[in-house]
Amino acid sequence: MKIFTAAQVRAWDAATIDEQGISSLDLMERAAACCTEWLLHHCPPDAPFALFCGRGNNGGDGLAIVRQLLAAGRSVSVYVVQPGRAASPDFAANHTRLAASGISIGAVEEGAPLPGIPAGSVVVDALFGAGLNKPLEGVAAALTVALNDSGASIISIDLPSGLFMDRPSTTHAVIRATHTLTFGAPKLALLLQENAPFIGAVQVLGIGLSTRFAQETQSPYFYLTNKEAKARFRPRPRFAHKGSFGHLLLAAGARGKMGAALLAATAAARGGAGLLSCHIPRCGELVLQTALPEAMLATDACEDFLTELPADMDRYDVVAIGPGIGTSDPVAELLERYLQHSPGPMVLDADALNILAQHPYWLLRLPPGSILTPHPKEFDRLFGTHTSDFDRIRTALDQAAALKSAVLLKGHHTFVALPDGTGAFNSTGNPGMARGGSGDVLTGLLGALLAQGYSAADAALLGVYLHGAAGDSAAAAASAEAMLPSDLILHLGNAFRRLY
Ligand SMILES: NC(=O)C1=CN([C@@H]2O[C@H](COP(=O)(O)OP(=O)(O)OC[C@H]3O[C@@H](n4cnc5c(N)ncnc54)[C@H](O)[C@@H]3O)[C@@H](O)[C@H]2O)[C@@H](O)CC1
Ligand SMILES: Nc1ncnc2c1ncn2[C@@H]1O[C@H](COP(=O)(O)OP(=O)(O)O)[C@@H](O)[C@H]1O
Ligand SMILES: [K+]
Image 1 (cartoon, rainbow, N blue to C red):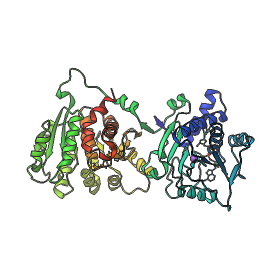
Image 2: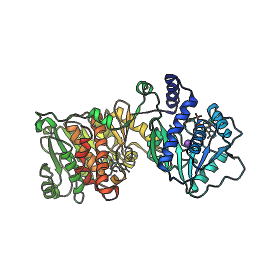
Image 3: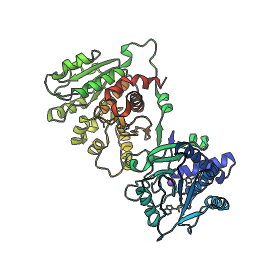
Image 4: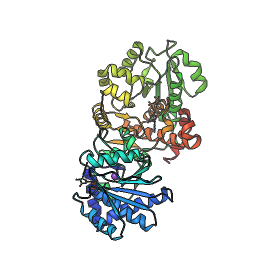
């Protein structure tokens, strides 16, 4: 599913109106009807609604929703902010229709007291949507702060008011929605970690926008859903043998961190690698051989951490390195040798990324077709401090192109930057995965997918999708509270089955 800019969203509306031979007022009525239906099904049946409307088409949606809620017999109060200002034609048309019903339409004016919100009300925010062109100020900003402080549930129409679609919004007043009902497709701003305080749960409402426009319009960003993952999945051929699925070398662990190695190794085995060898320090030999008999060992001479390259590196197709290895000088020197001698693409995670941050020029030795898996802190250590996620995703795309590799930015909607200049936001996963060890599972899984011959782009997309889907399956079974990263591995089977 493509993610469009504000300008493209406007063009999408226009293309729909043109293609379907309807008026923009008809499309507004349809969008409002989808919102009204959602509100009627998801809000308490006896709750009064309080709608706050701007003077553009977002406000027009709001007025149409008021009319539809009244027709459904609900108790509604409605306020227009700065009613003296110029209005969009569709706002004006809806205002005339609503006024004819006899309902009193309140005003929120500069300098006048803000309206009170009756306890138990559901607030519907239809102040500004995709047309926001400057930060909220004056009475709109004051109202936003008051609504946020009211403690009421706030349902935002299309976007939380004050949130820009395509640029940062973290320094000014923005509605903190409980739910955002957005039209057509998820918007970039609704997928970024930095906007988490504003957006609440996001519901994408299909309002019958042109599918032809969506197919024909190019966008660098897409939403990684089951459809996109399925398109990249290759089932195992019937006559396959273990040699068909590659040999992964996983370099992981140190004393006290063998759990990270074991999680990554088990995920690699379940992720479908034909052969798995683990380069671990001596202290981990017993635990690994006992817990994962499927893995072969390339045990280091050192008891406590990794120091030397395994013999016969040509035996391996792919190297995954990082979980639990530490950042001491000997390990850093070893990482440099790994980068020089890796027989194929690499997955670099955790401490491998932290070492690279100290030696950024080593990145030049990264084999093309590799995958880097930083979370935001590791990302900034590696590529420099960023003040916004918008900047981070731009850097991720630049680095992916420069390194001819996939660069992740892990989080709730992990961003996958691909070498071709496009990037995906993941749709799967849940907060039950916010635990030490979840990232180790991803590293093993990505290594296994690369070893099976998937390109960096396909492995990164599939791996991130499957990892989140396994998380969702684990949460369904054990709850987000009680699930473990090792449950992700057990639920990988359910995740793969979603691709059949
Ligand atoms: N165009 C269409 O056919 C459809 C549009 N829809 C709705 O229309 C919205 C977009 O409508 P608009 O483009 O009219 O834009 P908005 O309703 O988001 O608001 C923009 C209006 O507010 C003004 N404005 C922008 N930022 C401001 C600020 N900080 N302070 C004060 N005034 C400010 C602008 O000059 C403009 O008049 C969407 O988010 C969606 O809710 C839906 O009805 C679906 C159909
Ligand atoms: N709230 C969340 N929603 C979805 N996925 C999450 C969430 N929190 C964490 N994850 C996923 O879990 C993994 C955590 O990785 P990381 O931060 O490296 O932790 P660690 O290395 O300690 O396991 C990432 O893949 C991330 O996308
Ligand atoms: K809004």
